[in-house]
Length: 343
Image (cartoon, rainbow, N blue to C red; front, side, top):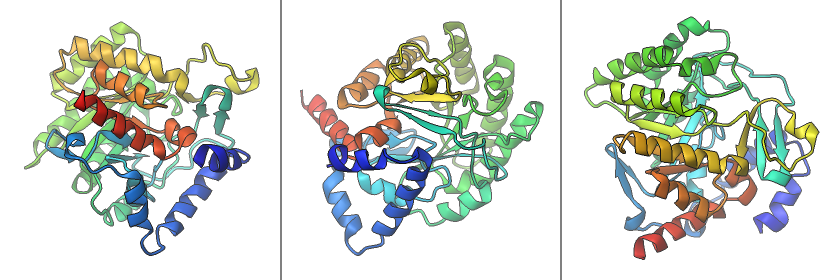
């Protein structure tokens, strides 16, 4: 139904407009009595074989929603009804910001891909907290970043601010230094800059009575030497793990028309699949699986998901696959994981 009716209709309109409309529709639809129960009966697989206890968190299944979809935590309770094991909200910054000028989101239908240059558009930490206070029985992580107006030299202060404010309200943190849509942000992936941020946040975390998992979200455009530096930094600071990967600026081997391929921003979806899996395999090998890996990037089928898990991912996340394949993808992946476990 989604692929034959819903998607063709939605894809007639601007993707950002559709995103906002879909949020409104899902929010209103879930207010109807019994809709939550109906959706969960259709999409949710409640099976103990899918459960994962990782870093003290009991994930009902290993399939999560990646950051960027529910930036301001407006829909995480409702989205969990589609069968997600966890939801990552954000990227959030200390202060609200509008992001980059529109148009800033593009569909590459021939490639099952998206290009976005949103620029960390969000309502800020305080608005996020107000919504997270209404959290129900959902595992929620938060992806944190820096404001565009913050000098790159002072970036660590923004991450610290977000961490301190959000600590009581989430299950884990993801540090985003890898978006291509905030000027100079990826410079923070260099070893010295990265260590400064990771050491500060892990120090604060270790002061807590019960520390929370902290992940680093990395770019797929790093070379092997840079990836090795990242692995070394994660091990040195005893970070919980890595989320691999963010979007890419690479435009190789795309089928879409040149005008679309030339749009600036981060590419997500099917073309990213192989590269993100390569990186998962690389960091799993180089780290000797000494930390947790969350695999994300180009998952559009159960086979893609299983490939990432076999490469070394402990959990996976989807975003663009959710847009192109619909909510049934989550159930299909979980069914395949159950079949894999039974073989």
